[in-house]
Image (cartoon, rainbow, N blue to C red):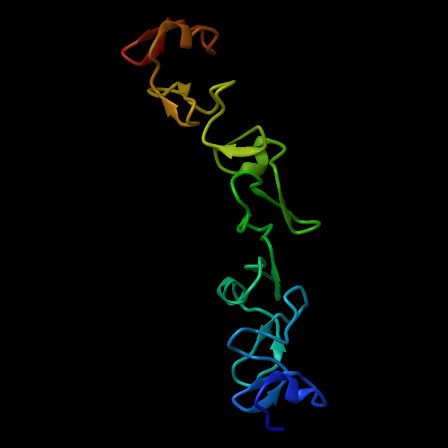
Length: 168
């Protein structure tokens, strides 16, 4: 059916006017495909809704669901926490929403969970800092010590700061 605007397609299955033809969806902006549905992407070849194949397809459509999980566009991906901001870095696999970290193990690698955020180190414990950078600074990165007081109560009984290292 020919059309000039979307409203001309009211009696046609699909309500998008694309290149003067009524179609189920519009590949240019994915109108006609529900973002939260199993088929959020409008296929350019046949103007029908289908599942996503990669993150770029989800990011190209309007809305906050930029991660392709299975064939659906979601707010975040629990496989790698993609889509989550620093203040809520973990993608909860149950509801696919971002949340604060609960423990170091959720952060991955040597990162530490500090007040719900994944950080390079924990200033309260200096974990995982050691060797030539034994102190966790306020910027959450390991650094050399600057004063004896920073070395007190460190594991191994090293109580003095000598040339940036905690020594006995």
